[in-house]
Length: 135
Image (cartoon, rainbow, N blue to C red; front, side, top):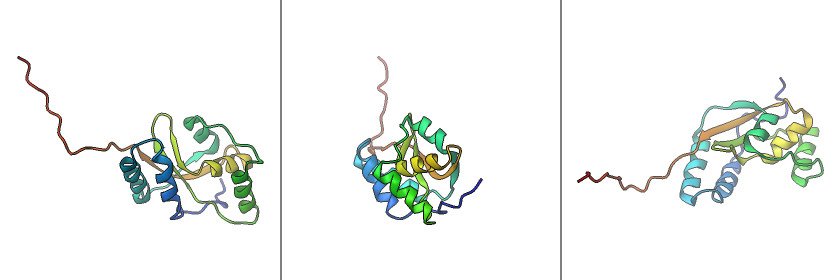
């Protein structure tokens, strides 16, 4: 397996991008917590491009998609791509890196992509729920 077109760590601007996207799916406070958890996650795991698309239920973007084309051009000149940011949910959420996954798939559908992944967090309100005793 070659990792020649991947950086070891996500770029700093990937986390605000992830937070922005996640705020469309969940409350902005929860999105902030998830983005912070992604930034704090020290481990990088690898998944095949085709499996990421399947788990997320996302279509493969065309070669002429502007962002996919831009990522493919970066790889062609030797610029490394940032790992993708994922959230375990049902389906999988690609918080940042959808275009990079598609570009990598176009190079090799079995390519293993470096990812930072966290489980979806639950926002607590600070109030404890108590069950009333049955009469």
